[in-house]
Image 1: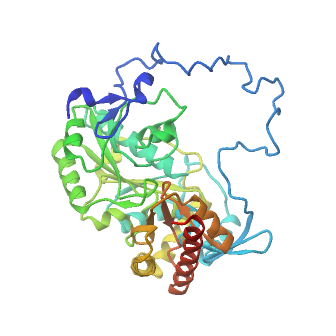
Image 2 (image 1 turned 45 degrees about the horizontal axis):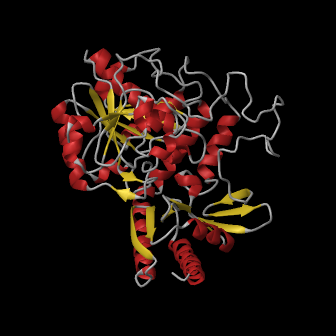
Image 3 (image 1 turned 90 degrees about the vertical axis):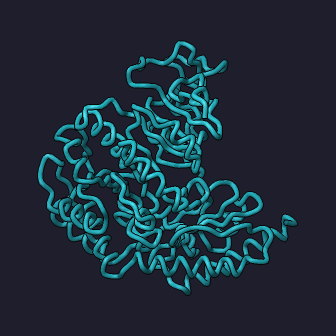
Length: 456
């Protein structure tokens, strides 16, 4: 790949030029932090700091009936109760949940042990800041290190925050511990790492960056599996490579084993840290505690969230011992991260997963679900491929699936998309064969009805 193919997405005029087969990057920290003089919001952007884009001085004008920002395209369903694999709406309708709150309710809705431990903690102490020792937090961290290659843990509130912490740790390790000028993070096209400014810049999908220019400096994106592009992107300023083991938001694509092995070896050779984003794949979702464990590697840093606290807001950044000294007091913090209530939920989640061998069950049920889907849809031309790992499964179709999601809801089955043409199934990790059989039968009816209606 020629040097001219490397585009700096931190410069607003160049961001839109990102394309397949090239590495895109943001500028160096030595460059000016002010926007480029050529930066423009467009011909229709004549807003002043005090103007109202609605052309009204009234703060409530044109706001509609909701007091919430319309940042979510919400389904017309009001869910009010959950238990195990099932949800109920305010009209009494029951739904078989194969979304799990987007891979969050890994133990099903309202798991008893987690509920009991959280209730007990609420009777004792809700919150104390991280200027004090929090025994529950230490216990949760120790339990996470016992089921992974990590030695140290930082608790936060979400996956995006965990990925932010990983990026900061990688940079500070190189700059303050190793004494180098490394700061760049390399990620891959079609990846998803969050919606903060840094993590959306790291994300390899242009759609999440629209309207947020200028982007932060120090990120490059290369095509997945293009080892030549990756090698060309690595330079004297490269701090880390960041990878998902399954590109879940990008279409549910498990990463090739050989590529991961080659990538890990390349990182070691170049002195570059390997960060694995396990926000969706971790906590048993793929049939292992963490998805990297399928690949025979040990990342320097990895992240977790979603299922880590069974639905309470929590995230974690985990790392090897040699990275401990990069986060000295005052270098990174979280007000709510790992507070007593959240830590209690994490502990109870981990205890349940150990006692009930949840990762092993997820592996078994994932194999069963994939086999049932393949058998059911083998003669259905509209279904092109079933793929996934554990209970993170994608069904690629021959056309858009948004209407199929809606039909599923009408039939009492909840699932979600992973791109325009991919159905994503995320049942809880305690799902039974009966649940799976019922879900597959319902999905088959929905797809049959859709294809008959559309003539596909």
